[in-house]
Image (cartoon, rainbow, N blue to C red; front, side, top):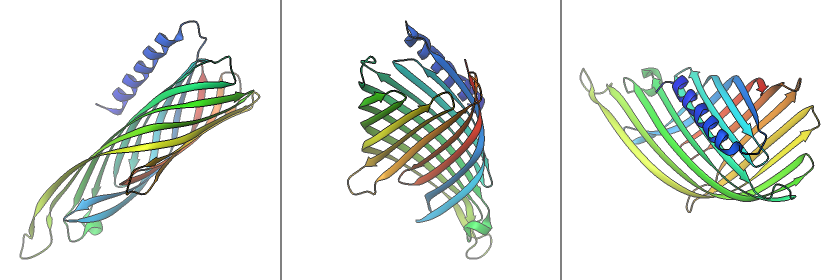
Length: 271
C-alpha cells in the first residue's frame, strides 16, 4: 500500500469514528500538512554481529485531529526520504474523557502505530560485505487509563498503560570480499521479537487565550532485565486566526533496537 493510500485509509477511519462519536457533541476538525527532518539510529544483526545504523533526511507528514468535549481522535501519517533509505509510519490515537462537567475526569484511550523502514548500505560502510539491505516492520499497541485534572485552560493527565511491540527485521547481503574470487556467498537473516511493557506517563495541555496552545506527552516503558525506554510527543500551535495556526511538532521515541526523532512544521487548518 502506498503512503497516500495509507493516509487516505487512516483519515477515512478517523472521520468514520469521529462521526459515530459526534452525537450531541460539537466537534472541531483540524488538518495539518507538515514538513521537517527525521533522524534514525538502529542496531541490526549482520553476519553474526550487531551493526549500528544512522541516517537522516527530509520528512513529510499530515496530522488530522478531531476534538469534542468527550473525545479526541488523532491520525499522523508520515514518510521520509533519507540519505540511505526511506521510512514511513502511521499513528492513530483515541482518548475518551468521562464526567466532563467535573475538574477530575477519568480517561481511557489507546494508540496504534506502524513503522516501515528500509536502508541500502554500500560496501564502503559495511566492508567486507558487498552490500547490506535492511528492512524493518514494527507495530505497537498501547491502551491506557488515567485521571485528568482540568482547571481553566490547563489540563494534566497522569496515566498507566500496557505497551505491546512487535518488530520484524530482514537483513540481506549479496556476499563478502573474502577468500578467492568471487568471495563468500551472500546471506539473509530474518528475525522477529514481541515485547511487552508496563508503562506510566503524563500529558500536559495548556492554551494561552487565542494566541498559543501547547500539549506534551511523555511516557516510560518498563520490562524486567531491560533498560527503561522513553517516548515524548510535543505540539505547539501559534494561532494566526480562528481558522489558521502555525504548528511546530517534535517527537522522539526509543525502543530496544531503534531511536527516531521527528521534527515537523507547517500550517493547521481548523474546520
